[in-house]
Each structure stands twice: as structure tokens, then as C-alpha cells.
Image (cartoon, rainbow, N blue to C red; front, side, top):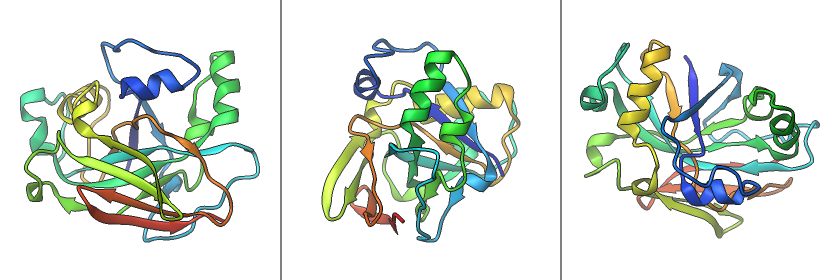
Length: 206
């Protein structure tokens, strides 16, 4: 199982990241997470010792359902069967240092437990995957919300693009990017994620 993620896929979020990447990118920005990053079934997230600014990034996540390579965008919808809401945890202080040095992001993005996943829902239950509201509550207060219609690169384009470089396999996950409103978590926080009004994600921070 592989975990792919898309960086800078919402314009307003790009602006909040130190004023970087204001304009639309021609191609998706792709990075990967280790399989040990996956955190599911409501298990708690433990803030790692190597960061003092661990931030949530709420995202639509799609699940790959077919083997695919060099997938055409017009057929990409056939290669994922379910969606959910997930959290791409980021060691933001570490990310700033890595970006300044021109280094890869893996250690600030792909560490253990950094890919939290909710319960999947068959995509057929939604009228349009590219027009879904999603949000995150922390301790009962909405802290981030977005709609997939605001993506720079659509889900189908992302699936097609990734398949140019990696063979997609059944069970692979794709985090599709986060909207504006990312922020830090602290020990004791209770996080709840919603997709189209459905509660699909719930866990605690320790």
C-alpha cells in the first residue's frame, strides 16, 4: 500500500504558507508518506518529539480500486471507488527549515502516524466528488473547512498524473490537498472530521 499526497492544491492555502506559491501550478506537487504513517480506526495521534509546531491539514482522501499505469484523465474516475476525510499532519517548523535549504519534505510530512484516515464512503453515494464540503472540528469548534470544487488540480487529474510515475495498486491512498485554515494541535485536543455533513473521522491528540 502506498500513500500519495498533493501539496499546494488550494490557492488560499498556498498564500498562508509564508506567501509562497500564489499562482496556479501547471502540474500537481506530489509527495509520499511511509506506510507506517497511516493512522486509522480512531487511534490517538501522538505529537512527535522532534517538532514544536505540529499542524493539521484536513483533506479529501480517495482510495484506489484498480491496478493502473499511465491512466488517461477521462478514465481516471474508474480507478478509485471510495472517499473519506483525512489529516495530513505536518511538522511545520521542520518543514520551514527543509524548504529553506531546498531539501525534500519526507521527514516533516511522512513520519509515523502523520496520515490519519477516516471511514470510507463509496463515491457513488455522492453526486459529484468534485463538489464536496469537508471540515474539521477541534474540541467542538470548526477550525478548517473547504470544498473540493476549489482544488487547483481535480481528483481525476491527480490520479492520472501520479500514474505516469507510479503504478497505482488496489488500496493505495491519495490525499488531495488542504484548503486554507491549517493550524497547530496540542495534547488533549479532540479532532472530528466531516465530509458532506457525515462524521467520518474522530480521534484524540496525545
